[in-house]
Structure formats: structure tokens, C-alpha cells
Length: 395
Ligand code: ADP
Ligand code: MG
Image: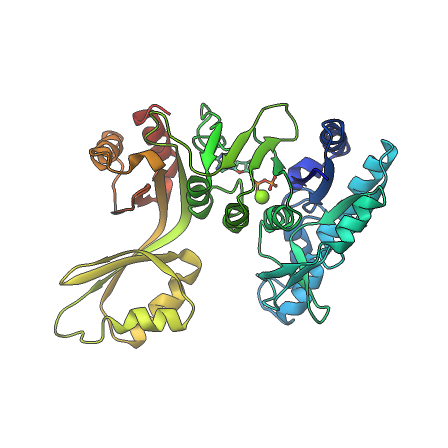
């Protein structure tokens, strides 16, 4: 049986007209000889009636009165509604459909509500559904614990449902349908002349996703990579060939693949002299408080790192408590220049710094790995920095 998983994001199911386009994609898969398993996100984005953020806005946003378990029950509703609404359209087009919640689809998770981990997928129900001649339409972003509690997989988690199901069902490939033609050299909302990247390795896409490109969830990439399942990122609203993600390929002449960014970062520098003996305790205390840090640079007389701006206040409290001298730069943005091809190529950092300097963009910090170079800049410089680098590397 040639199974494929087709995952449709929130904007792909946001209007009746778009749901018809989704139906076209499902019918097309059948025509190509595949048995499609459809995964959907909640309808629309923030502000739309049944989008996850809208559901959350029904509750008190200042203070939490409920336990995480209850939030997951609320958040799981959006995808269930979406499944039924889309299924009606598929049905009208003559397809036999069967709506399944995450739990019904056999997705078993741990009980880490709000960010649950998939423990295993019992594929029997889906396989039987297909064998009975139905198309399974599965609610993304959710699962169920062994004891029957509803869980969610973290924001953007429908992508995870898509690739995890693809892996469990040994699908030929997974298609992630969204509102852009595929993965582009930069977010097309920032760089209007960004272009489509036709093929990428799992590793590169993971870097992209992990460093802020919203187009696919990083954990979804991990599931695909582990099972070596090809993933296409495609546009529901066009016939673009999309981006094919597979095992590492030769990057013929491609040094830089693309640029992405993560905003809402805060840079913290701590002074380090005899008067502050316990300065390094900070790292342990932050870890114990589950505050993750990055861009960590250690020098003899000071340390620098960044945190999510949401945690800035908590970090300052801890620094005060430990009596550590510090400096804070709020509202920063971490730009990531990514490319498997930069391994061992000299001069890239120099080119980045030159391009940013030419636009009078102050670089607050840098870091690099084999395949990524990061630059911390002020948030207001984000767009201009991305555009400058996009141009400098001729993407
Ligand atoms: P969906 O609702 O379909 O899951 P998302 O909003 O999660 O869609 O992801 C798609 C969005 O990702 C696009 O609208 C685009 O603005 C954004 N994006 C960010 N970086 C990139 C990139 N490099 N290539 C393509 N899209 C990107
Ligand atoms: Mg998404």
C-alpha cells in the first residue's frame, strides 16, 4: 500500500475556497495512486474564531487558574473542528472520510501537557480505516496518554503529527502544505525577492526551523530524519513543486542556503572579578529554573549570553539575588546565516560583518558552528540586517 501523509496548516483550511483547494490536493494524491492520510491544523490564525490563540484568549490571560491538563483539552478543540469542517468538503467531492482525534489515531504521548512527547503510534486504527476504503482525517497537534488524557504537542505541533505519522505508517513521503511555495532563502514576508530552495538536507532544515523559520517545526524534521522519510513543503494555493527535504545532498556551489531569525532575545553580560566569586553559579541556577540560554561566550573577566525576553525579568531577579553585577540589552534579534556548504569556507564571517557595517547595523555578539553563523542585533535592525545579508550572499 502506497501511503502518503498530507498535512494542511491553519491558513490552508481558513476559508471555504481554500478547503476546496485542499480537496484538490487530496484528490490529486489519489489520482497519483496513493492512499492519503490527511492531518489538519486549527482553522486560521490568531483572531480567527477557532484558532488556538483565540481559544486561549477565552481564558484569563493575566493569571492561570487551571492546570495544564485543562488547557490541553481547550487547545485540542481547534483541530477537531477543523477536521470535521474539512471532511465535509472532502465528502461533497465524493470521498469517504473518517475523522480521528489524535488519541483515536493511536498517537500515544507522555503527560507533559502543553508540550507532550510522542511515545509511540498504534497504527492499527488508521490502517483499518484505509483498508475499509476511508481517508483518515486526523486532528494534528494532539495525542493521548496511556491513561486517556488529552495532550497537545506544542505550538506548531501539527507538523510533528504529520511526520511522526509518516514515519509510523512507513509512508512513501510526507507533504506539508502551507501558504508559501516552500522553504525560501529568507522569510518572504521580510525579503520580497527571496527565492524557493528546491532541495535541502534534514540538517539544514532543522537549523532553519530551530533558529526561527516558522515554516516547519524542528521536532517534525527530527522524526522525518530518523526514519529517512522525504518531506515536501508545498503551497496549498499554488502548483509549485515545493522544497524537497531528504538526506544530505551535494550543495553544488551553494555556500549559504538561507537566512532566518529569532526575535525577542535579551542579551545579558555579567562582570567577573574577585568581588563576585559566585558569578558562575548563575548558570546552574538558571538551569534549575528551566531558563535556557544561548550565544554563551565565556571570557576571563566577563560572560555573555542571551535569553528569551519573556524570561528577562526572572533572570534579573536571580542576578540580584546572587549579587552579580550585570548589564542588560533588551529587544534583540538573533540572525542566523545557514548553509551546509560553509563548512571550511573562509571569509564568511568577514562578509557578514562588512554587509552589516555598510548598513550601520551594530553587531552585539556573534557565534558560529560548522553550518551556521549567528549575529545578535537590535530588534529594530532585523529586517534591514536580513535584507543586507540576503543581498551580500546573492541569494
Ligand atoms: P502553517 O499555518 O501552514 O503551519 P506557518 O505560519 O506555521 O504556516 O508557516 C508558514 C510561514 O512561515 C510563512 O507564511 C512564512 O511567513 C514563514 N516563514 C519564515 N521563514 C520562512 C522561510 N525561510 N521560507 C518560507 N516561509 C518562511
Ligand atoms: Mg506551522
